[in-house]
Length: 368
Image (tube, rainbow, N blue to C red):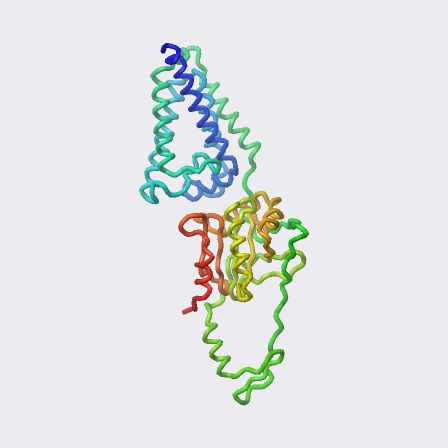
């Protein structure tokens, strides 16, 4: 029994150490996801998130390491760690009140281990309990032998490593394009301009149109009524060309269009692409274009090979991607555009996720 009591504090230290180290490391993969979380929570902008995220990760790793030693363990390390966890618990309580206890990923372990706010809250409570136990059962190094400078060196050293290995996420830039070689099995569609039809006679009840069959004025008027559309606007995606393999650029503001915003390595994005490919078999389905985030862009050929799609695409920077999709939204993003107007936006993997049947209904709706 005495041996068990002897090793309990050490076991508690190791558990806390592992929790903080894994928490810090998971936020690095990918680090832009943690930056986006800070922006979503309105704690930082994209410019300041670069600094804040790396300092937070450095603090987690430094505190995890510091728990294993005895200098200032009771006067500083444990109280500060408990204080941080208490702040996180308050934040999680607010998130549970606003969005529900079981909705979303709190981001405690990044993308490695998604946790709901309630799960994260309980994890923090258990960790606080372990820290309180440690406070009561560890012996701190004598004051005259302790050097606070050692702890500062640990933190600043960890922070320095973070800034050395993780560069700043590129700022918003317009019309960034990055070509990636696609598999030879993927044949990109040739975007051909429709032949212009010109009216050459309109005297009787019949209109002769060059390049088309004769159509009655009544039928044309009825068709115009059916095709009533929203006023054309210049969308936020007008600067993109979506060209691949020498194809003519897509005019994203012309008529009905489907714009997908995907991450190359995202499995949910690939599933959405497969669903859209099925819909695109219908000859009346709108043109489809893709904006890929420049995160693991080397996986784009694999994306095309797995999904067997042949839609034109463009690659843009991380911050630019989220500014275009919207910081409050998540991938996969699927937009239905009509004359540049966003008629419907699907995003993420929860309530507003992409739904093929819903999109089909949206496309059939008449503009009022």
